[in-house]
Amino acid sequence: MGSRFSGKVVLVTGASRGLGAATALAFADEGADVAITYVSSADKALALVAQMEAKGVRARAFHCDHGDSAAAAPLMDAVVAHFGKLDVLVNNAALGVAGKTLDDPEIDNAAVDRMWAVNVTGTVSNIRAAAKHLPDGGRIVNIGSSVSARLPFPGITDYGATKHAIHGYTRGAARDLGFRNITVNTVCAGIMPTEQSGMTPDTIPPALLEALCIRRMATCEEVAAAILWVASPEASYTTGSIIDVTGGSLA
Image (cartoon, helix red, strand yellow):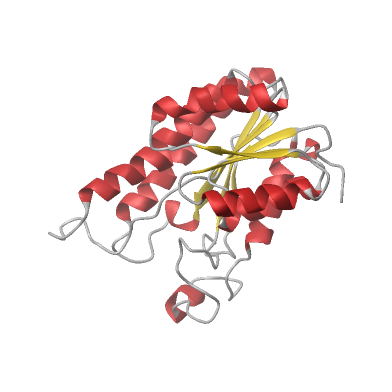
């Protein structure tokens, strides 16, 4: 175990699996006490808490629906009540609804609206609520996507737009909170073998690989390493930035 985050309290939203789980474990490996949120995967969330506690840190899972903007403030209050403070917020919770073009009569508009609520409104609400608790020098890390800047195929308009919206909010929040030395950055994650992507190294379409400079999928651990860096003391002068961890898909 390292000690880069010893004594720090980190909240990773949507962390019962995938990138969120890898990020939570990485923070625990570096000595942080870690709070995570989940919506429906309680068993996975509790198993992850046990893994982190086995590393000698404090950990707890909080049930939270990030599609409900009113849930953000009570969540931050609960984290601070349990751990005593909050130093780092990682906005990882997100939904992906893809496959239907805007004019498709079978598009599930309710699902698309919920995606906007979780990906954008949920992230914004978390930042507003966390800003009241974060100390000077705190960290906010948002999770973006390679398709926030360039859409390689039809059917992902709304998903890409939700992630692009976070880029703008990241820059604005960095301005608003900079006087307190709170940094706000977005880490753009490449295609990973997660439940949300639905792909593995063996099933990723060749056309997607051809768009990458590094012709393979990312691992969750590679993206998590970038998240930890922008949350670390070493990144104290990096804010309002969009960090590209997409294998060069944006090159």
